[in-house]
Length: 250
Image 1 (cartoon, one colour):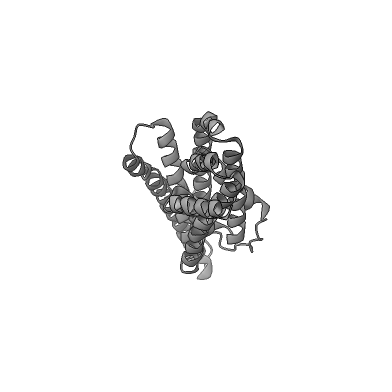
Image 2 (tube, one colour):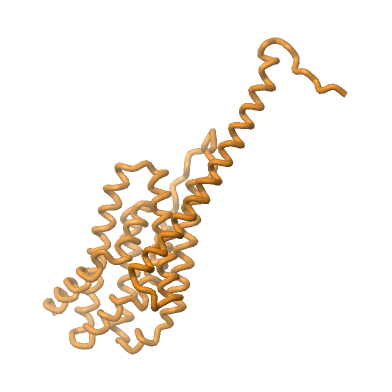
């Protein structure tokens, strides 16, 4: 039992290093509290690996991985666009103090994203293969611990990065990361013959395009705001000098 747990921890931990789940954990850690992110990851990981070791490889092969990947891509794109829109909205001159966000909403966002991302992933099939030769309980426990440990490293990096970056930059960065995840997942699902490096290169166009559009929109809004302020100053100048404003001729 102990040997099975240690073997599963080592295999899954090494398999997850540099995987998209670590990048997702990093992006979520930049946006939400670390214990909420870790709790959502642990719950989703335990559920996915329980499916893989409980039912085995045949259910994993029968899962509608294409449909699941499409839903995951849509969720990633929606979260990315929502995050960017939130941080590129026009600044309020008198912002009201922000009320703390409820813990339940971020938890379910993280939980659903990791469930959809990990269903049908290579880690699930590796766990199912291990469960065919070793004790299923040990494989489930070890694979869950290994994946949570790998993602905890990414969360720690997110915490360290978050301490040295302003909240505005963190929000924009996490939004761009989610757009990249969504585009990469969508391309990998719709064009399975496309190689990994090509998918990564093409997927970068999604966050780049969105960032360009939002920058252009913000520049237009800034010009309109500056023009409105200049017009207000011009109209108020005669009043400040003690003269009534000139009325347009009839």
